Image (cartoon, rainbow over the protein chains, first blue to last red):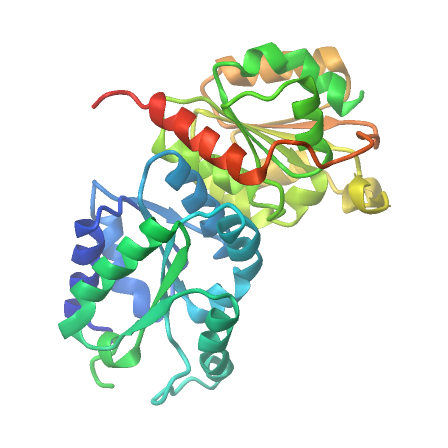
Length: 171
Length: 191
């Protein structure tokens, strides 16, 4: 599987570095290494979800209780979480650090992923969620740190789009 | 059994717990009995009160967490029951007030009115202990049992489809949120 272990490790280490101690996740191909890293880390509480929107509630509870968290999901999982994001995280000013795999971009081979890719950024814009792309290892650390900082200072959700050029080795 | 009476019967026992409730009637009834800084009312995001309770319970084993859920809310997040069951935090008591209706939006029947058994779903999802009660004494006994016990428990309390006249209270959402967060911070054990 050509999902990049190196990039996954870089992302994981940055998340640890900014203080993330709980990750909610619903598996998707590009996330396999990140999820395994969380599984193997005694200092990380991994919460496996049935559906991504649950992760909004879990992160909200963890935040109010004093733990920094991150959400790992596919863009279709983000689309499935919109009400929770709006009526829990935004309504109650909860910082969310959402790492969203940006499926359906240029280079996408799976026909079923192609609709989601085209709407993800528009939905993020409509929800007024600040986001940036992670598409090269060079800026991963800086952007994760900055995203986390803004989520905390604004007390709002932010998103990082994990892109093909970073996550997939034969992109 | 009326939900408000059921809540009142365990109100004193909530003092040392952390409470997360769903929106609307349940939140208003708790506040009509008395608001405390350790109570959080999720005034929207139906279905996520149990997920919030899980997030608190997993990260704060020092706390006993109680969730007041409803049939309409949990039916929107049945998958969340499988997540609760997967992690089965010992410090979480999950109460579902089941009035078999979406009371605040016209009283239309939920699926529990036509036979859906939430305690049965919870059991099948893997929640270690799930029970249905329909009288105050049984509710209070089941609640105290769960509170003093050491096992994730879902208690489905069958209640009448009646609620308060109004749902908006004078506690603002963000005031509640920051007060609750502060409470959890102050109670955090020193490390």
